[in-house]
Image (cartoon, rainbow, N blue to C red; front, top):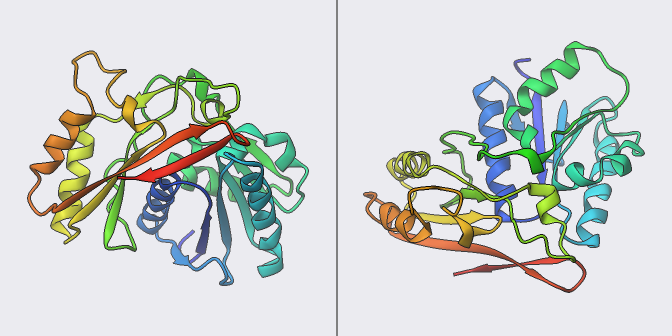
Length: 251
């Protein structure tokens, strides 16, 4: 699959931004060229969001736009909206492949399998995130186009508020092992990045699924000890009862 160009469009929160960076890194490591979304590409990937009705609509709009750019391209919908609204996306004939939130980690494998099977109709691969018990780790994600790096340390939410769809899109609380977080940030610091943004779906719950009492404050203290890191930001996502919205706040 070398020399094929892949383009990304990301909707939603910092967690999605981090996961797009992880997917870009995986494609680059597999020999693909990364292009801008308005470029002519062989594969377009829309990392969708579903926290509001507007996010759903924007996800559908961007997916329909792709074939206007390149009629022969492969179009992939992945992420939260794909996870919870597979039936809606299957009605969009332009989409070739639908992947859930957990499938992002192996997206290159799924796309190459789809291409090799020479399929001419849309296909979905979506696991039930509510059954996932372990954090799905992308490994050391060092790719970033910014002067600060987004670091995902937690996924999922256990609150199941009546107005919020997030637990169904992201599953239960799952925390990333501190060793993995420290390894990633250490490598990023060696590349000259001095500022990191720590994020998660329900960041304050970090560590609650551990049995050793290790919590978010412990992780932040360990990050603060990494040579080269000068500033640590927290990106908090919290629910609001207005239109199943998720508000975001940076500290």
